[in-house]
Image (tube, rainbow over all chains, first blue to last red; front, top):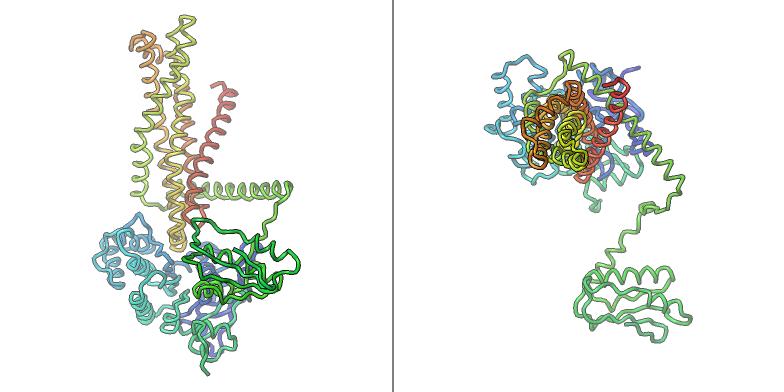
Length: 261
Length: 369
């Protein structure tokens, strides 16, 4: 199997998706998706409701097997990887699920601690310290011993982010981070994402249809069109807004409002 | 409500229209259209309309559809402004092609085939699950399985100690019922004392394990399915998978272990309570003394009877835990799916128990136990 080709400037992309077809049984959701995410990108997966954004993300983290095509992390083929190699790759990813996905039977500190316990040699006190630090990073200092059901939805999202960062991942995935958040919390989360990207040097992949977020944080993107059943645009969302040849993409990026030329 | 003048059909809307009062049918209008030489145009008069809600709209959409089919122009000037706007809104987006589901009656063969394929699919899923669980068990034996001990203890408490009240009640009553049924018959031969044998052997060999199994399928199997199903809906299972924890090791294994440990104990307890139930009838109705009754029971039952029952209960425990967890993990992505998962877990659990019971009966008979 040949690895992904380097991009034009000779830098190897971090994530490469090649000829990906997503299908449930005989129903094809999207076909021939090919794009590359560079190191340090904030990559946006955008598209209307039901276009398969979250499904694409679930493919990228191995929860769904592609009907066709490959996903590469660096030079490694994630789709065709052996279970051990796949685990190794997964350990370097952090995922924030749409509903937070916190383990409800554990406190926040235990949620984060579980990963550290499994994948590091830290002792219990050190684990507790690291968990507190991660919670402090998302503004939840002092909430270590709360259960997920005892905190608000926005806090659950942030706690989910703290858990996603537990092992200092190289790639962070966000599934609809602003869904169910008020505008201010949503903006704060955007800022947090950018700060984390800058300080951790991680690559970020975000599924969203929040225009404000798309333009604030995104520097690369892919647009999924449910009618064409494939991607119809990719690149910097700001460029797409100005120059994308596809009127549907431009319309999406300006909330369907008329273009004033 | 309908008046015709010079080829224009004026529909006069009057009084109060409300959904509570029902929606008048557009059949009258259709009949007018069908009668020849009438209705080149349609108009409305709503001056006497005092109040309206969606009932007016529903009626008008129907009328409008009729007009469209027949190419009759519809003058909406006579309608209240609000109705006009809502009507325009309802018709703004044309019906999406292919959006309407074809409701066709599937033929008998078609349905048989579909269910057969579904059955094959679900058998494959069950086999896959059993295979993976076997692998997980080997991991447990090699001490490589990862789960939280605190989860296991909580589960043991939930499906052990907390099940005692219901197990007590049901097995006591089963003992009473068995004794009653036996007492009436055996009294005719003056063989009342054999009620103790009947209750003892029946409880030890079959009823203790069976009743515990069915109670636990309803109580714990459903709880397992609901727990795992909810975790699936809230993406906790996904989070486990991406964090590299196998949901089978982490969620299913402790549940299976908890039931394997607790079912034999519950079964022993149920046997004991059942015998007490029988003794209450023996002493109360048949004038036996407590000592005679218990001596007779002790003589009647053998260790083989007892251990056979306990062994069955352990197997039932595995079946309940596996069916509960399987249905939970198969759960779809909605709250109604969690309910379905719980229902299906109980059904699968009880069916599996009864089937296992039948197999045990045959095997025990062949082995002469």
